[in-house]
Image (cartoon, rainbow, N blue to C red):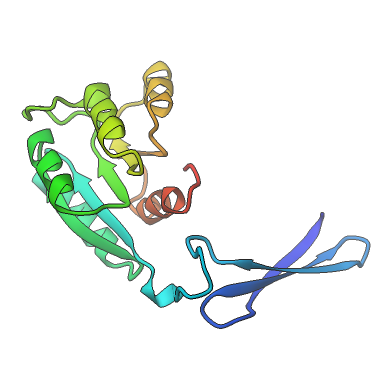
Length: 174
């Protein structure tokens, strides 16, 4: 369908009406639940994405935390500087999305693909967003095959961070 789509509230806080006008002048309307809303009893204002971040550089952690906390739909549950702290953090806190640096030496659970594999086995529903300088296509393919839902480059604008966290939270890749 070629045309223009407009989202408008249908049932406040839960539904959106999607109206589009096709190039032939035909109109279509449908209504859908907002992403992340599983039943009509849930209010959008109650929805939040619980996020943990892990990076071995304190300045990067602070910048990521600052950017994520500016978004009211994101709730930061904790930060870790190595894999040992990360595993302890995830044991203590429920988390929807983990923003993870690929190279994070010093922890007892390793880093890179070893850590990603461990996380995917232990927390099946955890959505991993990799925040990294890795740009090797073969390695990036292996990372995605290990279940990473989003890959964000540290060379890109930090404004992409919220999109990169939000997409996996509703089941999409980024």
